[in-house]
Amino acid sequence: MRIISILILTLLTATAHSQQNGLSAELRPQYGFIIPHRDGLKNLIQGHVKAGEVLVERQTTGSKHWEKAWLLPRVGLGLFVADLGNPRQLGWSTALYPYIRFKVNGGKNVRLNYRLGAGVGYISKVFDEETNYKNVMIGSHLNMVASMVGELEIDVTERLRTSFGFGLTHYSNGAFTIPNLGLNIPAISLGLNYNFKTNLLNDRVVVDPPIEKYGIIVYGLAGLKENYPVGSRKYGSYSLSADFYKRFGYRSRLVGTLDFFYNTSLKPRMIEEGMSVKNEFEVMQQGFMLSYQVLINRVAVVVGNGVYLNSKFKDDGLFYHRIGVQYKLNDKWVARWTLKTHLFRADHFEMGFGYRLK
Image 1 (cartoon, one colour):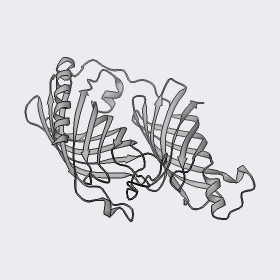
Image 2 (image 1 turned 135 degrees about the horizontal axis):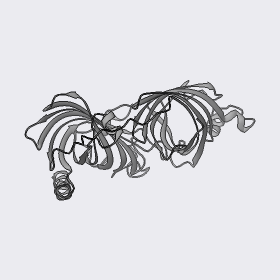
Image 3 (image 1 turned 135 degrees about the vertical axis):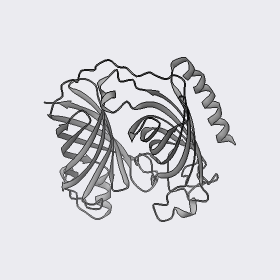
Image 4 (image 1 turned 90 degrees about the horizontal axis):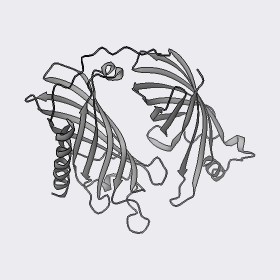
């Protein structure tokens, strides 16, 4: 009942705001579960996850080129609230995130959509050595949250829509505080969306801006991570990277990246395993990553897979991965935020800036 009350109150507030600004509001109850993706997690999963979202969104009108290139997506802000099925050890969670909803295909009244969002989340019960030592999923109240939903949407009337969806919500702190096995919550959902203003589309001609077909961007990135045992110090991780990209139209580009890593958390791990570390150069790693980037206005969504070309430390495996976003500040500078992982194990968040050479 607490979750329902919070969502209804938020929806009423959002509705009042929507009426003044021509937006739409949506209430979306969900029913799912937490995936036991590691040994020892099954004892924490004691029931299904009962959750819901309140979404406030705006229909793009086609007044900008990127909106027409992406077939007039809808952009919005989502509030997620969930009972995690184990009130004593996991408690409840909430999250707030901006999102964008794309139309895949469909006609005037029935369509397939997918929605991507990322933001900040809170989990009420986290690991504690004395009071909650069995919760090895998450070690921090504040976390990064990513949301992905695919849905079938049907127009009931000119203003009212309903949708049936399946999605995944992910919580992680990027190993900033351990334990950090993360929460993965798949769920089915039913949405009811009311549009307060129709016929917003812009019919004026939008001229295609010129695009660079090839380019080079150099980055400096930094992050923090914690090693086991719990309560250890946080170590700095630094990287220098160079992207070489080929752009395909206005919506995507293929990128090859040379990476040079200096992760100070590796040195104590190497010493613990009996490896000799004569100097700091032996801690450094070099790699090559191939990534596909989706371009949405000034934002690039980064998804990449890399291989270590040179690394004395072998326990993390041969491959590394990145997922995240970068934002174009102007014609030369970009800001970047990514999560570096080894398969499904988060290594650390990277944040920094890049400069376009060409």
